[in-house]
Image (cartoon, rainbow, N blue to C red; front, side):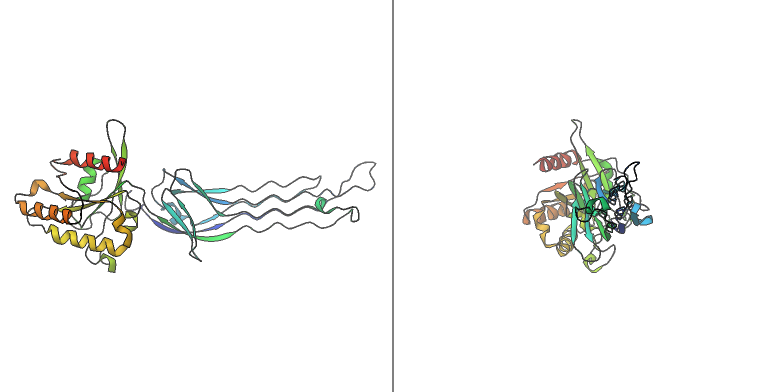
Length: 333
């Protein structure tokens, strides 16, 4: 997911196909002077369907093409021939996409499972041909129904990444370095703030075949809830994780207690239910620590909140094995 292609919100406009009109027709057969009504029904219009797919992890493809329209139904024909139904249009979205009506705010669906489908605009029903209106009294009806119009909707799509573990922390806490050391993800790493400008996903794979997804959530600083830095635009991705990892720098010269308090304050300001997500505190840059005070300060903060505490170094890989084993145990639970 490069910065150019990642997009977690989008607005699209969809139009289902109109139903085909019913047909007015009469049989014309040799030696049958008065042929009966034979107008067929119109076909139903195609619907617009959203489908969750693991092959997508961004909504960027809707930025260039926000308008989508399904085919209309074919009109009915003589000889009681029904018109062909219009083809449905299926739009693929990442798993974790929340769909709401852009005009009313109504929640239409939450696509979290692979292959899960949601009909967001239903096609119009085809009109009935005149063969449906014949009665003993009215044997030659000369009218048919028009097809019904398809639904038109504007949709707001919001992606909340599906990950088992989320890495959160202030800039330069070591999130990108840790993600790159435990997975094949290659986020940008540098010694200045806001190196990572969008969430990054990585798959942690074990030799026995067990695997899980880790998400790096960037942009949290003091005042993020007020729009500072990257604001709270990416914190929606913390809502679906099974475990939140609070990364804090415990190297010499850092301020782990202040950083942890800031992080907890900004997360709590985003949504009140954050306390329901299990959390751990992870001290990073252990290889650059010669003074135990920062280590003890971070571990005491974790104990005060009844959270587990682990310390590691992504560079020297000290503590990485223990960290991954802990994550696996919690995720399997």
